Image 1 (spheres, helix red, strand yellow):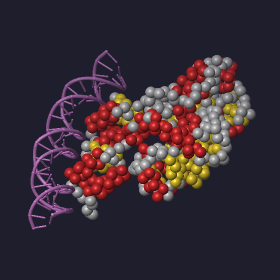
Image 2 (image 1 turned 90 degrees about the horizontal axis):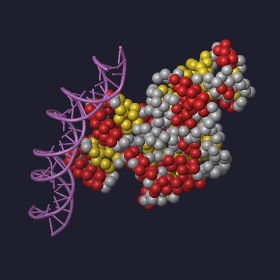
Image 3 (image 1 turned 60 degrees about the vertical axis):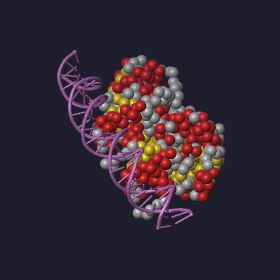
Image 4 (image 1 turned 90 degrees about the vertical axis):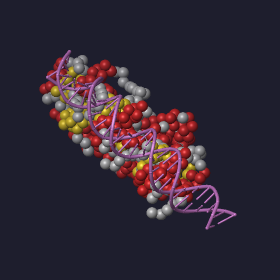
Length: 256
Length: 256
DNA sequence: TTACATTTGTTCACTTTTGCCCGTTTGTCA
DNA sequence: TGACAAACGGGCAAAAGTGAACAAATGTAA
């Protein structure tokens, strides 16, 4: 362990915590080879300067007050239902999970409900979802990259596909405009098919989130059969008849 | 150990500390073969000149970039300078160009000046830059992807590097916290080095944008030598002496 | 050479930093 | 809620660093 100047150690602490989002006093003490009491004294000063925020047991990065996380707030339609779906979906995420969040307004609501969680890694192709989770201390965010779709925040293309082929996650939350018990997941645009298929292939468990208006719909391009989908989360407005159809297709359906 | 004149030793101390980011009195004493008391006297003078900052046990480089950026960026002068640099940089972009825009506040100003242009492709690792150009009808945007840095909009990591290795552009606009005529482009954080090197390698013409406060600074990690940089755009506040130094190093320098 | 100024090295009293001890506070879990 | 362990902060002494005074070495000029 190289001995550092006190001033430099303080700067490195700030760097370290910014990279790791948070750190315990013990971790920092071991990292820099000094006594825990010394770390506490350092942290007191660093907090005084407003760079980090002290908590019991360690530090976290100071939550910036200007809460302007997402670039844009759209979608008034089905807002209440989407919010309920987002909350339910987020509750399926366990600490330590690595998940994929597809681009969409419903998945954005999932992100909002993950802000206060800890030790979660999120891979997304939506800049809005990424921006929402940007300051969440317990959430690591990876953006897929790719071409930015005009007047949206979705990324798509060969780079997106490459990243999705390079990862493996426990759960993928997929948004869609059409899901049908027999024909499965379909899309109106061919360009988006590969990315969604990549997400499905990268996940152990595939969870589709869709409000009532998407249920029973069929679009032109086939993305995935019903058998590839494990769970569907939708609103309680959906008819019992439809629910039964999905259950018969082997899909676990959660209505909220 | 070569015996140095006092004045030269002082200059060498400044260089040494700038390269190492910090140094203890003992290290410097051994390095220059003089007594610690002599080093202390030197440091007192050097600090008087405002070149380095004294701490208990040694010295560190005055980290304007770490503690005062919020102040600097809010200060109207700096903002004005960045705006001028952004405008000038944007004027170098020709219709049909494919360019890389690095993450940073100055490069964000470049993006703002590209909104009304046509037939331009922008590759960026900054979600803010991407969002700024999102609705520009004549600009295609590709985001590199990667891990999202806490409290910023920068993307970094293996996916960023992969994308940068996969593209070729006519011009890359690089932001930095330190550029020096002799030591070239340097960074305080090791993790960002590969991405910047990728941008430089992907471009036919490398253009560094840096306001006055970055000129002549040296940070720990080496990114690129001066010979790899074609053009430097900075504010007219920069001293003629510094300008000449960069010109002698073969860098075209534009002051606005 | 001598006289004098400047710089460097040495010593020492003083200050800051650090590690450790221990009583108090805080978070967790049954 | 109460018990328990972890974390905290204040006090203290050892260690490291500092500044000032002074001596020694070096440089300069008559």
